Structure formats: structure tokens, C-alpha cells
Amino acid sequence: MRYGYKQLTQGSSQTVRIFFALWPEEHIRDAIIDRRQQLGQLTRRKVPDHNLHLTLLFLGNQRRTVLPELKRAVDVIKADTFLLKLNEFGWFRMPRVAWLGGAAVEAGQRLVDALAATCTTLGMGYRQNPWNPHVTLYRQVQTKPVFPQPETIFWPVSSYVLLESIPNKPYKILYQWALS
Ligand code: 2AM
Image (cartoon, rainbow, N blue to C red; front, top):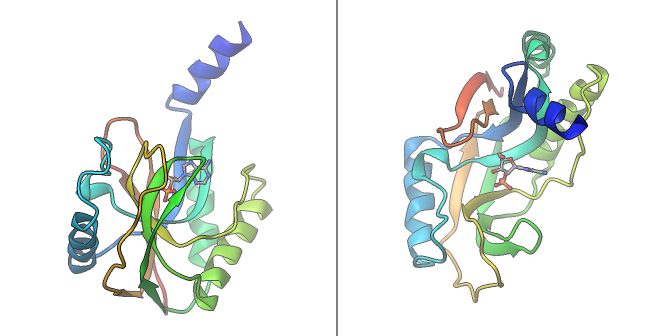
């Protein structure tokens, strides 16, 4: 009955599915929605407008009790603002998602590294993938589409958030931090 037990604990209020992300202000969100229209209706699994985000570091299921400790530890991170350029559409084979993204910039990578180091220090288990700045637009995209060239979005990043992913609900902002 191990499997049943695991399901119970992962779905229980004792765990949270969390990730650090950039949360677009309204005009950036509108620009992303505008570029997405260039792709047409790729699949039925369009990411809802209110959930559009750019993941910095995915932590997956963690103990809910770690949250206050995580907030305090992230509060002391000093990181710079940066400018992201979203200038290409792309497709990831494994999660089968189509996205809008751009090159990783140094200050953004430093922030991701600082967040990862903090989480490791707190003993949080997670698997870190290389940071590929992208906003997922569609899920369940089975084959690579032929993409047009989007007009570049210039995204001045001055804050980041910790989001909770709750099935069938909008992402919930747990905490927000300013960059300096
Ligand atoms: P993405 O769409 O930007 O790739 C919440 O589940 C978000 O965390 C997803 O939208 C996805 O971001 C990211 N995510 C989910 N599972 C992940 C995994 N195993 N590794 C990395 N990122 C993941």
C-alpha cells in the first residue's frame, strides 16, 4: 500500500507544490497574449492568461512547514534587476510544450543560482534543470510546430515570486520579493 500512502501525503495539506517564477505585470502579460495569437490555436491546452509565468526554479512538492523558513532565507538574497528579451518561440519535446522565450541573462542566472543555493542550504530536495527562460503558452503539443518570428518583448524584471500550483486553480502567489 506504499503507493496509496504516497498519494495521500502528496495531495495532503502537509505538502505544497511550489516554484520561483517571474510574474508579468499587466502590459507584459498582454504582450505575451498578443504574441501567442500569432500561433493560432495550437492545442486545446492553452495556458490560461492569468497563469502565464516564467519559471526560475521548480521545487516540486515540499513540506508546507518549510515556507516561513524559506521566506526568511530568501529575504536576505541581494539580487539586481535585469532586462529579459523574449524573442523566439520554441518547443520542448519532453513536456510537449510550446513557449515564448529568450536568452538567459547573467543577472537572472545569478538570481536562480542564489535561490538554488538557499534551497539546498535548507535541505530541500529538488532537481535543478538548466535555466531556460521561457513562458509556456500551450501544453500537449505533440510535434514541433513551424514557428513564426515574434516581435521582441522587452521585460524589465524588478521582482519575483514564489508560486503554489494547486490542481485546477489559478497559481497562488505565496511571497513576492523586489530586486534592487
Ligand atoms: P514551465 O511551464 O515554465 O516549464 C508549475 O508546475 C510550473 O513549474 C510548470 O508550468 C513548469 O513551468 C514548471 N515545472 C513543472 N514541472 C517541472 C519539472 N519537473 N521541472 C522543471 N519545471 C517544472
